[in-house]
Each structure stands twice: as C-alpha cells, then as structure tokens.
Figure 1 (tube, helix red, strand yellow):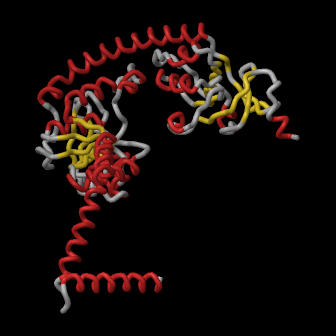
Figure 2 (figure 1 turned 135 degrees about the horizontal axis):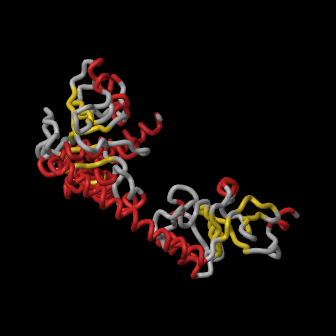
Figure 3 (figure 1 turned 120 degrees about the vertical axis):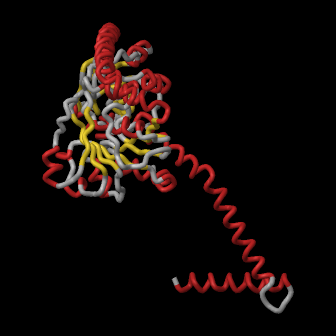
Length: 397
C-alpha cells in the first residue's frame, strides 16, 4: 500500500526518477534517462555539463549551488532553460543528503518530494534572471581582468631583473642542469598522485623541490626532497634536518620569515628575495634558472578556470609570470601520469607475451637435448614431469 502511495503520478508538479549527480565527477558516471530529475552540485554550471543534461532530456535539474555565482559568465543555465528544463538552485543541504538515486520523485513549486514528503527545495530560476546574471558576470569579469592587467604590469616592472636574468635567485649546490625537476606543492590528492607517478620517479629519479609542509608528507611516503622552499614554521624539525637545501622566500629587503627558527636548529639556509612570497612560484623559477630540462609540477594547476576565479588576487601575476618564464618546460603531473598509464596499459601485454614465448623456447631447447632418448621423446618426458609436479603442488595446497 505504501509503495502505491509513493508511486502516484496524479500529484502536482513534474514527476520523474531522481538521479544523484552530486559526487565527485558524478555527472560523468551517472546514467540519465528522458524525464529524469537530476540533482547536482555545480556552481557556475558549464555549457558542457548542461549539454550532457540536455542530451539526456532530463525534465528538471535541482542544483545545491547557484547556477551562476557571478564569477564567470557561464552559458549552461540558459541552454537548459531554452530547452524547457525546470531549474531549481540553492537547494537545501538536506536535498543532497536525502536524495535517493533511482527513486521516483517529483518537483512542485521548487521543492523535491517523494510522495507527499518533501526533502527540501530551492529557488526556481527563470530566463530573465539567468540572462541578467550572465551580463553582470561578464562585466565583472572584464573589471577583474583589467585589474589583473594593471597588477601584472606593476609586477613585471618591479620583477623584470628576476624574470629576465634571474637576479636574486640563490646559487644552490644541487645539480639540476639538463635534469628532470619535480616541484611538489600542497595537494589534497598527493598520495594518489605520487602513486600514479611511480614509474616516472623510478625511471628518471628527478630532482625534487618540496614546497612548505609538503616536505613532511613526502618523507613519510619515502621520498627525499633535494631542495625545500617555504616557511620553516610549517615544516617539522626532522624535515628541515633531512639534508635538503633550504631556501627561504624573503622580502625584497632580504628579511625572511622563519629565519630565527632555522638559526635555532643550526640548519643552513639561503634566502630568495622577491616581490612574490609564493614559494611554488619561486620553486619554479629556481628550477628554470638552474637549467632543468623539464619541470613537472604536482599541485594546484594554474589553468583558465583558476585565472578567471582568482583574477583579482594579488598572487595571480606572480603565478602567471613564473609559469610563462618556465614556458614549454613546464608540465603538469597529471599529464605525465597519463602518459605512463597509457604506456603501461597499452604495450605491457606485448612484453608479457614475448616473455612467455622466450621462456617456452628455453624450455624446449633444454628439454629436447636432455636425456638419452630422441629429441621429441625427451621433450614429451620433460613436459609430463612438469605437469605431474604442478598437480602435486596443487594437491598440497
């Protein structure tokens, strides 16, 4: 009886099967069908995400976030509305917790129901509001980019000697000339990324430059950095005494934060005076100046999304210019991991087959010439003995 109550279709609103797409990259994995109610966690929904929902012909989209926050002029919500899809945004947190993937539900007046029970709701987004937000975000982004342009020009004006000739970059006793260098900064997925890079690390043994508190995480994972760049207050005493060359970001006048702690520990350190105090940017410049043939960065990526979202940040000019200075030598760690993943999965089976064939050839050669009988009989006897040995082994286990 209760099942019949929850499956009623005569209740007001849009009826459909709810699909939970709120997990990490959930919209890539979830199976969508025509008429579904998609629950997403997508601030500033992209056009690509919206197109996926449109192609599936979902009836409604309930967003735990705002479809357009004002950071970027995204066109996704307008595409959905143009197809007649109902959009609900800023949904209650309870919706994300209580939504049941594959269960029939309905939306009425911005609220998501299972039968007569509401699990929360949000605000209905219309085309006028979506279009107005798009224009406001476009104007705001233009203002942000103008501010970034001015800040970048000022940064280049003050740091030209550093960017062009490496003035201020310390001469360290670590050989990076024509070697692979890996700059590792804070990353929530550090352990898994290091695992994906194990073949690269094993093959090239790159010079590792650790940034800030990543030092201790690397040591715990069995990796020894050759250089440490960062604030000593964020690094353990054992990390600072690990034998790595320590470089302290310093203000243009030479004052470096944490220098007192370094002196108390009796650890030798060098200062890196610059207008930027971002240790990742300084680590990249350090690798470039000392002749690295390739610089692999594991950490927060500096891509277009980051640039747009952080356009007004005072650290953005430093991040942008340091990466431009490293230029074509700079590679994101995810790209290196992908190359090794494809290489190992694509050609590994060929080497396995060749190994098996080689082993069989050796067995045939040895067996054929061992014993007093003919070559063929010797081979048959050896094969029978091998089969009997395997049978006995399996019986024992």
